Image (tube, rainbow, N blue to C red):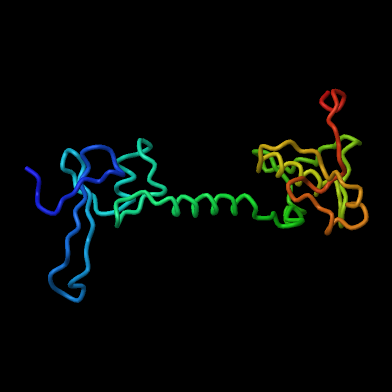
Length: 181
């Protein structure tokens, strides 16, 4: 038996109902609460609760909980947010914060800095083997893009202006078989 005030919700799978209940008393009298009911009769009071129950079976990123409709404009905002997250620039020279730090083994003995191949040379202010190693290590761990170094020759003149922030602060390089051995 269907309760009065419950309507079908076409944005959700078949059998889902939406109910809007108007508050009758108190300071918030006249405002409404929206509830959703699963085909089995389970009541949902919020979008996160609904999303947890439905899991990956339904994409609720553009679902408006209050109206019960899919809103393409909400999807646009989510896509813009993702695009903006991808465009956020890296802080320049942030690897310099790692200077002075060193690795240690289980017995807390400091592990000396490894030697880098001759083709791998740092550029920019305060370029040292230690800072270059930390820059390359952080680039390897923070992304899946190939590491090629700074390709522009202008980096030599002014590294603050001609900088590819997705690459470590070193000259362009190619890893050879000899480097691997």
